[in-house]
Image 1: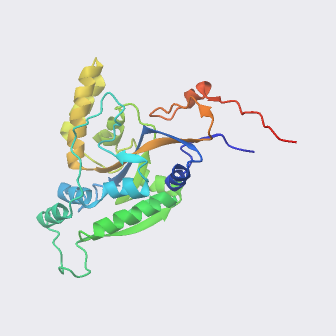
Image 2: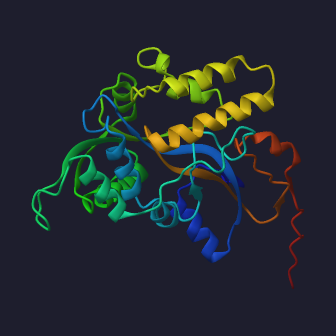
Image 3: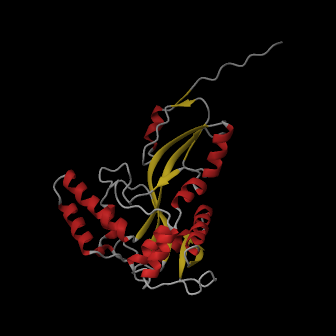
Length: 289
């Protein structure tokens, strides 16, 4: 059989090949899937915001988006996606700044032990899935952190094992992806101190009394405008404190055969558009006899 349309189930390199040879239609739209580096604040070094910020400055997010994702992503700002009414577009974002990362590590007391020598300032274990893309991304992050004196031991696991470890707080660093986020209440489930394992998704044991208060007020707020204002304040604080290092929002991609029309992707990549998809009639074949 043949396939007329694929949505998202195709790797960026293959999409790039199709785009180059012009054999397929490529339809793209910003999505809500959010990739991040999660940090466990129970670790003594990672409990220091300066170390977390140093990691954020060390990672070249632009290179990940441009080369690993082949441009099929955009740099993420916060857990809340750009399509949300509660998105804080002006929240703090890390630039790629090795000098700033090294200065923060110095300030935190993790000075370079041997100058240009091989000894690291810090060592962490980064747990990732066996998915090829995530292993490649982990290798890029490993190299980025090595440039500022942080050595990563990258370990890959089957997703079920990785999920179990992360859910129980058994990790130092991890790279994962939240899929299909639409409600800013996800901020409560991920960053409220009452949502630490085994109760919720605050797997890095992040705790901030002001964030808790703002989330509680947002949950009880009677109208969307008030909720949005409070949720945006949460995003500003969390972006600075960096329990997560935001990486990218996935771009939803449809690859279709020529002749299909009506393909309209939504941020959540819902398939409701299929009712509007139609195929142009194929011209009858002619032959000379």
